[in-house]
Length: 107
Image 1 (cartoon, rainbow, N blue to C red):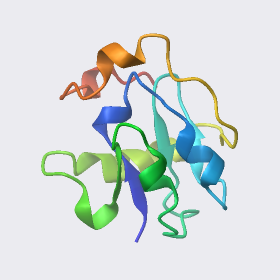
Image 2: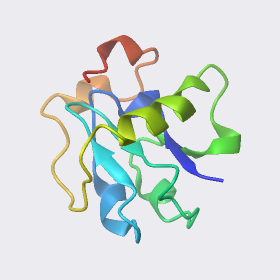
Image 3: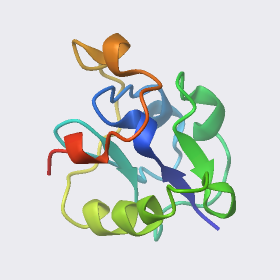
Image 4: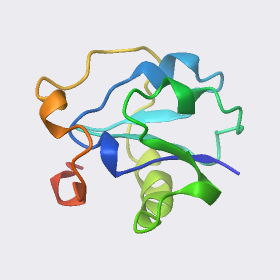
């Protein structure tokens, strides 16, 4: 099983999770992070580090967000690895917990 970054990360992109990842499974896009399912070792370290609860075990992805499983796999092949914490996006607080942000995703 792998962990999946979901909708709530879009336009927030907090990176607390990347520092604790022992296998560098996180990849960074313009306004979203993803987890490479081939690299993730299901260690559970990232999930509690996310300040906005955007990371879930693959089997527990919230209803309606199942597409993020495939999206994480797809984008992790395209985006570079991120291993160090950075500040969230400048207007992240405004976007926290807003539902339906998939249309805001920048590739």
